[in-house]
Length: 204
Image 1 (tube, rainbow, N blue to C red):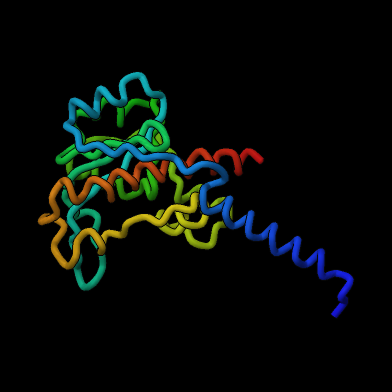
Image 2 (cartoon, helix red, strand yellow):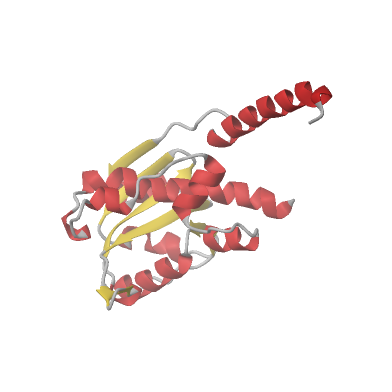
């Protein structure tokens, strides 16, 4: 009711517009994406000498009485990202990356690493070592929703494709590698982007 504050109020609304715009672009120019369908050897070369990379599995979806059972999941493929905006999707198991996934000197970043750890161990006998978990980092930082899609939208300003949009009512086994690519590659890409933001927040 204080009309002398009209100018201040309008300035606040304009600043809010700028704040929303900044959050939607992740605080700067949107990062261009380069997602590539690759083979295991290409993925191995892509990660050669990299001290840290994001890793994400795509699997079948075994449900028992409506509950997802990770121990029954089979690997369909995986994605890796070594820098924001760049990621590969590989069809099949991760045997080509066994040494990197088990290497204590190379950091792997996953979102909900418990799933990757269990599936890799049961399916391929690969023991995931030296990993970070962006889901746990989000919980530590008190984000109310720790889902990857929700965090990407809230923090990075990126609306990710959902699995249901990719499946369109089909079983995961029927999805082609070309259809998996943008969905799967984005998982590791966004995981890596969130990791770098969360590291700064946790340091602060």
